[in-house]
Length: 616
Image (cartoon, rainbow, N blue to C red):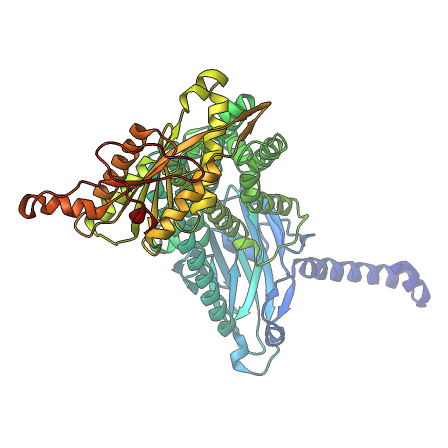
């Protein structure tokens, strides 16, 4: 092309040769300078948006002993290239990564030159600013560590810069790390950066506080229950708390702000240990040793690989990297597939755990795709995995709380009938003994008649069917009017509320006696069962225990008199017995018999069942 241009000019051959030499020299001198010029960015654009990415060039695999002056002057001849992705990433265990860019300020306002440069995800960054005289201004920043120069304390390396209007300067950044590096460099104004720091601090504090509260809740459950499932959940909670504190930079700011250390290893270990403890929690919660032995071995192997990340600094690099890959990348996938299979098999609790782990799984998939530049870089990426841990812990806490309430319920209720058991009754009696509440106005003791022959003739299954039917009929009769207990075998007790009158209690007892005589269907059998009942009302001079003992005495009297009836304690007769020693001899009437639809038969010799008293 140059020869065609010269041929258009009417020059002598010698003059043409001289022009070619001069033009080649100019091209040789200008071309390297043009190639060496870093990409420029105008600070005036910051006034029109909240944050802008910086156009950069990156060179990886640089010698760590390389002189920064040689890099900035071009003597090192680093292969700087424009990254293909908007947020580039790379891994450079064999050397440093250098970044270069150029800033210019075309604005007239002097305040436009005050700005902040933030390097998210990076642990430690060295910034070199080329001054007009050719010298370098060196600044170093780590996570929440203003090491030197214009570094600012923040969760990630941050620099506060000033560029006067009309100036243009070149900047070089050196990054040293053996892990995968992301370079979402951000440039914002000082005021907007202050707002962003306040917002991020509030978000991190909320996440960390929530997870810490859930961890304390797990600790209270593990100490109270003493079961392995709660201890595994506590370990999972603590590992999640550690990961969140490390990923937010709070640990670096509070504990290691003066140390030039890389916490990425601890961060990866905390993430993998959270997966390991979470996997152990799943195996214990679902009792996988018995429900799914083969899958249990797979999950235990996964937890073992994850546990290796805790001692990765003692292991060869390839084993440490493999353990982290299995724990943090394949772990959530294996966990979700296993829980999905258990859900398909209808294992109790598997569906709830599947829903609880879904946020962690989705966050892991998103971050793994980010490694391959499939998903975009978003500011929410910083909070995605910590938020998923928080949601998972909240869901698991709700599941465990429900299981704890269920265990407490079954501990106080009869497993067959669902009625209150003797343990619940004992607790109520202890509360009434300490603080009498006058909650109950009457006690009804019930015993089934001829229940043992049902078990002997038709088996315990038939007897269980009768007991279930009795429990349902008791609930139907006394629902909302008293508390029903099964004390064991065929013995039942009802404590009616004080709001009921004595006549209402007597009528309810009679209604149940009639309802209980209805036949019970079991397979091809028709079983009929009767019951005897003793009733005692509250005495202001005695407590709940005395009232229940009196009801038992009346029940025993019914058994002696012929069964299938109700006997009511006569408190007037009791009062007469109390005063007999001083007033004189009075007739002894300890109770009153009655039965619905059945002849009570002759009363015992020591009882006088007067018709008028029975009507009243």
